[in-house]
Amino acid sequence: MWKNKVHYYLRFILGMTRSELLGLLSLFIFLLLADIFSRWMEYQSRQQVMDSFQPTYWTKTLIEMEKSNQPEYTYSKSKFSSTHHGDDLSHKSKFPTREVKREKKQAWQININQADSLAWIALPGIGPAFAKRILAYREKLGGFHRAAQLKEVYGLDTLWVNEHITQFQVGKGVFRYLYINKADWKEFRHPYLPYRQANLVLNYRKQHGAFQHWEDLKKVQQLDEAVWQKLSPYLSFEP
Image 1: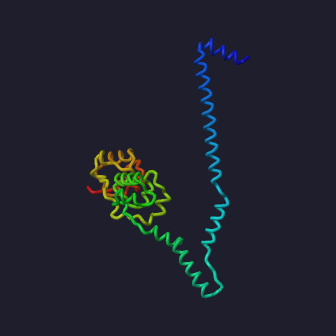
Image 2: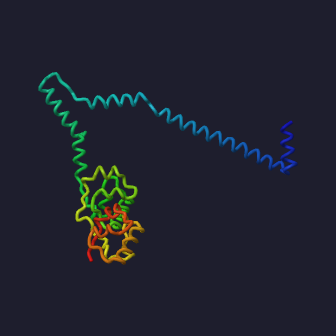
């Protein structure tokens, strides 16, 4: 009875012809068979993966590997000592100790104020993006005066810097200074210097003249001494 209702709805309500009904039925059967075939192929693929896993094979392989790593012992003292000594040497050559690894880590050195992008990329853990950021930040600073400033590079791992801190050399250090008595507003720029602090110093210099030394700088009201202490390696009081 329900078949007659479906046929009536499709034939007379939707206005479908007999050939259109047969086409729709054929399409439905085709999609059903395609779905069944797809599920069957997926099942076969999973079954092959499960069949390929052989625990007994891997167990046997692990046992053979353990036996090959064990030194050969003989009852003779002379043979025992020579064989054991030879195995010990071969063991050391194949598996370097922590001391050897540490020596390899200390093998490279880099001048962080002169190294180009290729030199940075050659280091472990540094890619082109980090090399570009390091060079850009070095240029903004005017040079690194200590290796710990590498931690300020965006995204650079602090642990990585601490691990290799002894391998970084600063060389001559700062190569561009901030001339506090000469620089105009456009030149008075530095990553460590906030806008408000720069404005305070420039206005004070305009009213009272040049700064002679660090103590004169402290006379500026509302001066953040911590900011200027951090900036001090880059300051020059030349008239």
